[in-house]
Amino acid sequence: MKFVDTIGEVKNHCFCDFLKKRKVMKAYDQLIAQHVDTVDLLRDYIADTEEQISKWEEEQKNTRADFQDEIELFKVVADFFRLNGRLIMIELDIQTAQKYLFNAKTEYEYRFFARRIYTLLYEAKQGLADKVSNMYKRIKNIVDDKYFEPYEREKKSFHDFLKDHQTELMEIRNKNEAHKKEEFESQVASIENMSVIKSMGIIQEGAEHLYNLNCAFMIVQQSLMKKTGDMIAERFTRTKNK
Image: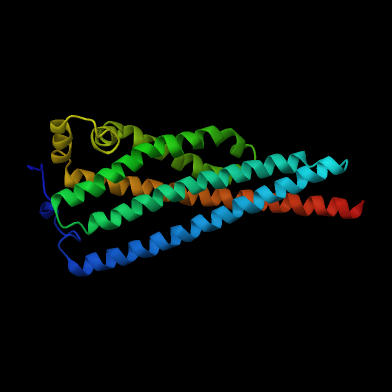
């Protein structure tokens, strides 16, 4: 195969530096382990939130108490946890692919993992970015502007990145990853024309956007968790004083 450029042309990169490569691999292992723990944590958060919703719904059936405000808030929180979970899963997949990409020993091996990351970034628009837009009003009505502003900024930045690179991401996704019925010549050409240098820039930028969006998510999440905690405490105080 005749590739447009090679991993050997990337100067001062960990492809050619054993010590740097080992350090990068260790860092990815740590990030991946942290994200796996976060997946379990978010699943527990969702389960606890859904359990509380069920308790309030059951109590409403058996008493005259009205917990509808609390139920609606907790439903938003549960959906937000699920949205954050999708973000973590995308990051987890990309970081795992990046680990092997930076350890690639051949041109095709590099492009195999790069193609996977392109596809994940392309799918992120439908699986994450579009879902974020759908929750926009619900979250904004609950979270203080000072906590919501970083989320708005990073959401827009991520959308702009996906829009800027949509053609490249879609071509790799459609001609190789998702549609294996594509003509043989077309598949080969799309792989050969995938530049190492250009793809590294896109992948790194995409990973940075996801990281920044996750940080913004965490700010909103902390605000939501405080809101739910205050609501429960207030409800408990009102009930106790009756």
